[in-house]
Image (cartoon, rainbow, N blue to C red; front, side):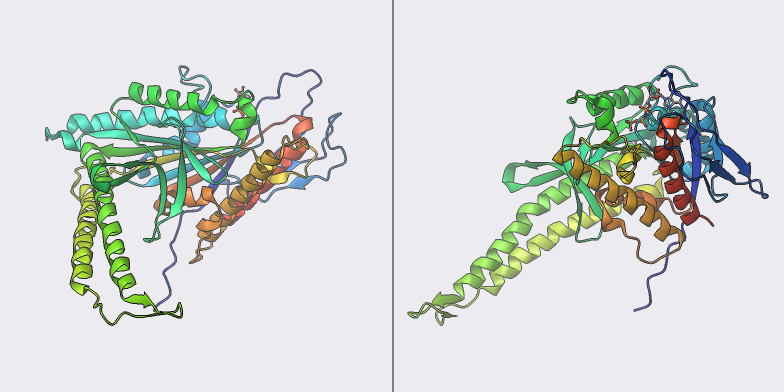
Length: 460
Ligand SMILES: Nc1ncnc2c1ncn2[C@@H]1O[C@H](COP(=O)(O)OP(=O)(O)OP(=O)(O)O)[C@@H](O)[C@H]1O
């Protein structure tokens, strides 16, 4: 067999975003410098010894490779970050590609501020995700207006999916925080499956994470805000909890035909379940009658029974018929793309607010994870560490064109697998959110070093 062809994937762009110095008494700022590379396309960052009173005084200074695409200062607002990082990717989205944006940093450094924002009314402060949704609706409204056909199936909308990844599960923020399980199917695809419903005739419908098709920006914003409320409920320390989960927001260009075709796949899969089970039961029943227990307790072939192969074959044939219905429904999904009037169908923004980077460096004295963790928190911390390590390794393997990309190493990389693969010729970026506060020096250093590795791995 010829070796599997390596996928050529676009490099990762890594940005740094400094948050303002927290307004706390005694807060002092670290001195940092940056310099542009001679090609003018990348920046290196130097963090000298921290000089603040409560910081890691004496820590060695460090200069990164010229690996960062841009550094945003504390006075750059969300609009400025959006225009530089996200808006320029629209030609790719409108060509049906996937663009991924990750925010990485320690707790309180501004990840949620960047991805979602805390003021959804002010266009300067709204986060990247809602700004992208707004521009996406402007573009698809234009396309919907210029489409000659009155075919409502072709009308474009934005499908929103929102979920948190915590430990080994995903929690659906658009479906009451339902726990969903991350599994690899026999087809090698990753499925994030939630509620299982047993229907009439033994049909079993396994629901994937919910996609809500939104037809206007206002509708999407309302749905997203309800989902965000679920992120916060059930905890007295919202900030700590949000830091312990990875939150994923997906905005996909869909149309009614695609939504219905995907729903049909779920229905056909549900119909297949009882027939698959029946075929297995018949096979076991026939084969178990083939043997009887002798007087010495050992099993011997039953001379009076001939396996009813016709019965087995009939059950298998029915199962095969239902499998073909699933395949036809899957083909219909693909056909929706090929027959769409708009090449942007399936174009997707993926925004990821990663868990706090302090878990990646728990030895750090500035680790916000602290030493008073419960056993559960420690276990969560280990999982977050392995997620963030796996993410870096996936980025490295992608960029060096390795044939084997270790997506299976963590639930986070499993969930993001299709987005990584879909971003071939799309765009992927990581925004490192950092604090200039001297007492956060070690955490900031850790974030920048991680980002430097990601940027170097993602280099051309
Ligand atoms: N660049 C910024 N400009 C203005 N305010 C900011 C900025 N970054 C962060 N903040 C403010 O700091 C606070 C903490 O930010 P945020 O909640 O985004 O941190 P986080 O990194 O998501 O933390 P966690 O991991 O704990 O969820 C918020 O009140 C936010 O508005």
